[in-house]
Image (cartoon, rainbow, N blue to C red; front, side, top):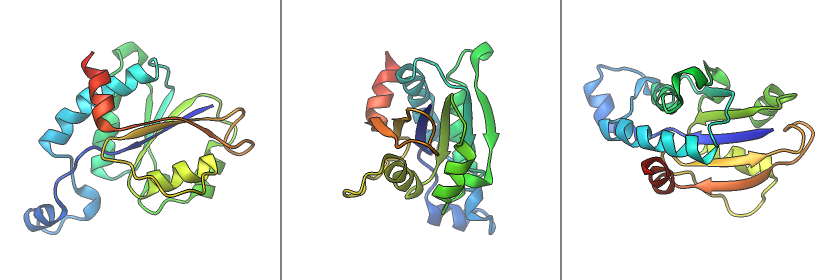
Length: 172
């Protein structure tokens, strides 16, 4: 099984959003125009890095994560787009054990789109890394592979790519 963790792209500033949103909840904070443009190329870069071999994209229900997932899905040829699902499992503060159980038995490539510090924490938990925590930049991603699936084997971190590297891969 292959697991990709993807942090959402650049979102509106919290303060500006709350000042201009008439009290809308944090979960509704969208990507900036630059974040949308960034994710269009990063989506192509991630598609290239994974050879287009993805069966499912699962995202946090927060607007910025859903937008990131949709933009990534658009990087695929229309007849090869992976299934996109929104799940409360990936809201900020998500549970590693719940996600591990949810992935149990999965054999395909799954992309999880979420938030910091959750993406960094999940990468650490899935790989068994006990070293200093690594932070995902906005629109950064990693690939973790499992001999079997997350419930039965420890993952191996294959790559951890910054947005700038994914951007370059998408520009090719």
